[in-house]
Length: 231
Image (cartoon, rainbow, N blue to C red; front, side):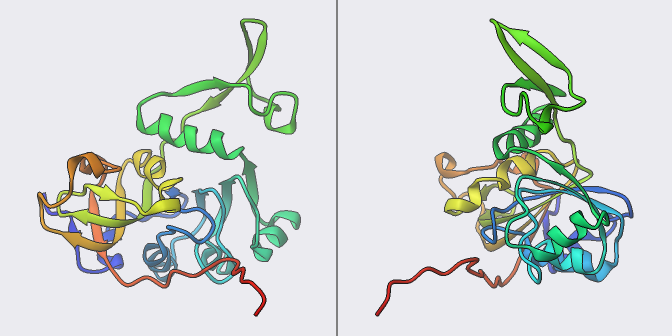
């Protein structure tokens, strides 16, 4: 099976449709699939639901799709530095399903592992628990969270081989592997594609069985908040 594509648009060809659920990797501005997000913007696909830790910033990451009103719902942990995200949510233009970060990561991982739901103590007694099934185990109350299975996963990795084995770099490993796992189809953008067999099997973070398409490209690598010492 050919997995390597020439451009992000080619890698997404035939996969996009209005109203779909997309799981996107990344943490803040680290490890976000910026090339694939730009291609979705250019495709004009609308009424999208994104499962992602956050929405980047106003002009980068998922934020560029909020600007064009292509996103109707976010399943997220953090509104963060994105003023447009906050404005749309507070004005009722954007539906938001808040998830604790660990719960969101586990919902993605569970979906990828074929687990339809799991019980967790996180969120019990808060608005997170409203409308969810409660169950007691060993005298403690837990709530049921459903696994996420997305129509499409888009992730960014550091290195890949042509079979789709991926290595993520540092913080980019937070949400990218579970996001990749939970998609019916996964498209990965990478900084470098290396020859088959050159990756140490013990160092592979996500096996290629989860990855259907790969595209190599140049990345901006923005810093969300730069902190420096005084001169």
